[in-house]
Length: 118
Image 1: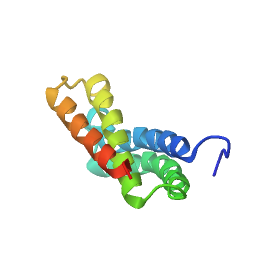
Image 2: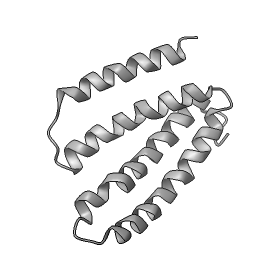
Image 3: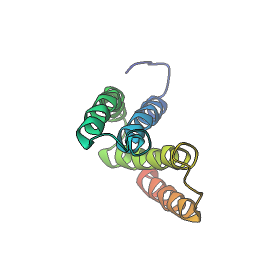
């Protein structure tokens, strides 16, 4: 545990959110910034960015697994992913807002409820 005074679920969520920022840029940022570059260059840059994702994601899962089940970790990750992806898509990639984001978010909220209810 990095900070024993901070609840495990909070440490996990913060690390996963930061990890997701790197992941989202690694997976999709090259579509905007490196569209004219060869795919190999984009892949190598993405792998470099993804290293930072893993440096946050691995401790997040290790810390989280001390109190959360594997299923809870996965659903938390998916909910955080959508929370990071929607602003990235809209503000960085200039994609229009879609009502489908709301519906997907509601479905994930349902998944979070069912996984964490016990």
